Length: 468
Ligand code: FAD
Ligand code: NAD
Image 1 (tube, rainbow, N blue to C red):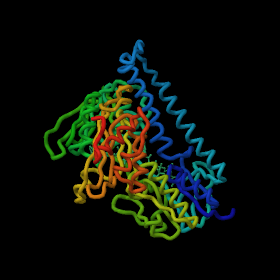
Image 2 (image 1 turned 120 degrees about the vertical axis):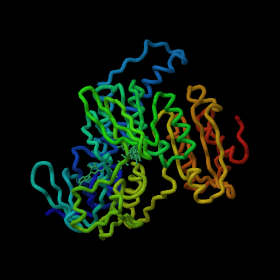
Image 3 (image 1 turned 90 degrees about the horizontal axis):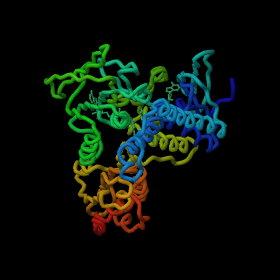
Image 4 (image 1 turned 180 degrees about the horizontal axis):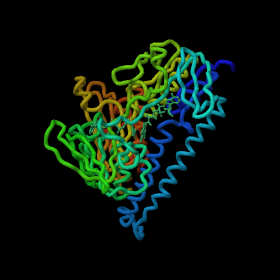
């Protein structure tokens, strides 16, 4: 057998590959085990990256359809070439996944293709699709096996007509009627993709609001914006069954509180009711690794499971299922394993919904602050009063900043607007340094930029906004 590794990482998603790279940079001898033929996990292969390729392309398609004439660009209406749009998406995925291959080579990380099963502390069996299993030894094992789509009881996905996000990223034609089950991030992002290309999208959501967890005011306003874009929402409703007829699907809907049945016809149904940790094949039972009531691997403050030398990060443990959260845990754990003080600040993790307009959030919502009894003040500024937004025909939305009423410290921010996902980071840095609304308000911002609306919201927290 070859020399043991310092570290074997199971899974090459944003948690696993980033952990491996940082550990190798810090001088550890690292192996990665990945069951898929390409690296990068859900995020690069069937998640963040392909969805953003389609969101970008369809946003331009919509822009050309609705806004070009106002900008003085006369064209004969754009025509959709779906095959090329999908080819663009596939190219972007290939370029990103091969980038990870390059990073592994550059950092002298040994990659094994196959299912990784923990046979005991320090021992991982790799079972490739063909060929004999192989045992590798390491001082530490990191589980970064990610998550999969949560199934809806009684409704089977075939990735053709009843799809998860994976099928929704590769439909062969634009559905006339798309049923989206779940008004979360996936439902609204992928619903947007197909709505922009002409699908009539109906979103069925169990709760009485969209985007649970996000600031309530943001969710309410955003629902109105999506309704104007042609989305139909059926809130407080659940799908109980879907009949697959030759002509199409017939979904049976029921009020969440019971009773009042109705049916809805669709060509394609997207099941997007959340994701659950993926732990199959890891051999958790063999080594006695504990999971919680929601199937997540339990870890301590240093990402160690109840078994010494076996760690877990990313979607498979608690916390938001976000690529950058998994990455930061990967870095923190690599640093801890190398004897440093790795740490993740869970209070400052941005969340972005890449719709049009985008939604970006960080820190506390108003609902959180009310529940915690923290006195707060709000600074708000609409993009209708921002010069650059007017020039870009992007005046929808606002910036909402929440600061402690006693100390002026910024506790949270919520942005609905074009490029919100880029603007949120100045607030992230501010919050990392425990900055105040006045710190932000007194920082010079370039003119004309959308970010001036962030400064104006900070001014509105105390000193007073200028442009409204
Ligand atoms: P994953 O990326 O799921 O990777 C796990 C890897 O482990 C996989 O490659 C899997 O094959 C491998 N694996 C599992 N078990 C084994 C085993 N036993 N042996 C070998 N290999 C194994 N997040 C964002 O932050 N921004 C976004 O814009 C965003 N968009 C998304 C869009 C969609 C459609 C979806 C589905 C998700 C999106 N996410 C987004 C969420 C993001 O993809 C996840 O949070 C992230 O990928 C989690 O990283 P991870 O490393 O924990 O796991
Ligand atoms: P989600 O948790 O965001 O939303 C699921 C929605 O489905 C919720 O609104 C929930 O109330 C609803 N729901 C649950 N059961 C239902 C039922 N039986 N009928 C109707 N509605 C029901 O989950 P998602 O959209 O599937 O996304 C999964 C994960 O992927 C999320 O945790 C998210 O963090 C991650 N993701 C992130 C991004 C991003 O960062 N831009 C993009 C896509 C996915």
